[in-house]
Length: 498
Figure 1 (cartoon, rainbow, N blue to C red):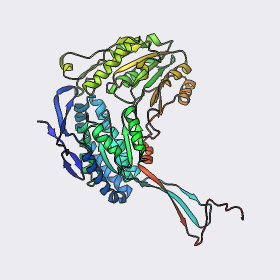
Figure 2 (spheres, helix red, strand yellow):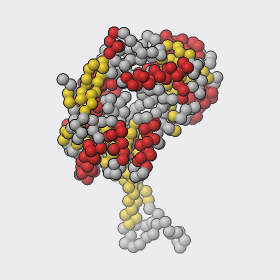
Figure 3 (cartoon, rainbow, N blue to C red):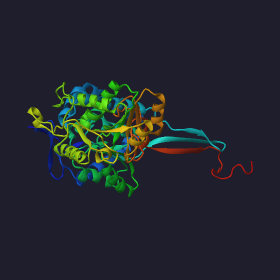
Figure 4 (tube, rainbow, N blue to C red):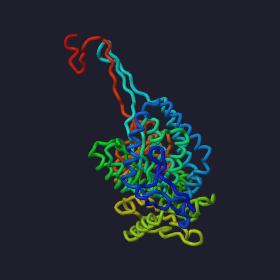
């Protein structure tokens, strides 16, 4: 029988108040039930927020280095359980083991980096304009943070949010994606084992409308960190603005790679295959568009189609498999609807465009890697985020034309340029409108100590990763100490009588 999981609220495991549950199934083998989870609602969220609020005072008074020590211990536990966590994640959301191992390693790296920031939450000291007066700024905790994470990186992305929040001194109500609740539950279990006190970290399972929005609307939640679709992000922003909550939104992408005629084509080919079809294209940083210089367009398209058609699909627990399933049936249907739109709008289907069938593939939600050629900028498949293994190929006349095509979307997350021309590379760095630009590497592959995020409708300006995360999860407090033993007035013309 599959294991039955519960919420964790105030340090205690609890069923949903409603008594309802939902099943978590393996997308590579839909007959396999990974676990049964509580289908919570606003009442469960209210209890979790109350627990987090009660725990906040004591937790915020822990010295930041001590909070970091707990997060560091969680990283140590993750190291010991790395293979177990990776295999669990593959069963739960489908991506291949080489990727889920990387997902866990990202969480480990984030633990160690965040732990070290507990000793580096630097403020600023500066001279006062007045005599016998001292000025400084410092970082302090904010309060209860609502963390809402997606299913495609069920370990890495929650750690990007939870670890900096904990080290900053915030308490947390965590709602993981309904497609990947088991990995999230295991992460919380690890943090509890590492020493996070009761009530500091609470997890509430359930749907976005019932649980996620209840967190966003709650008056005692002071921060929201959300990763997901742009449509949902806009809704969260609108609701949170009513109470002036601090909100960090990491949203959609329509990322492109440019390959110039002077590029190392074999290197570019490897990068595009990884960028477009890694995680079955289910990444916000996935390579969804490919912009080829006209001189190498036909040659490179042939190279790409030949290699992509040989990618092995299957259950990600098989080490030889290169592409796993879509996360669920509705996601596969969405991907297929875009391929039908692409054909109707006149794009040329090069390979794929259909369900992958036969043998064990019939057990899950597999879709063939798909490439469209002769795509124009106004086509739907060149504009909208698909979140699946579909690549749209466009032709450019020059580096300037290629950059113009790349910038022609409402998104601006990740970008890449393959070229040996240093002038082209630096022009791309300057002119591409994106939060991330790679030179001679694909659009995917974040590093934990660097800022991560995008521009335009990819987000609202905050960054995850590195010190930037701590800027979101903490407040700056400015302190003035006047030891002159008399009234001194700043912001008055103190120079007039000098």
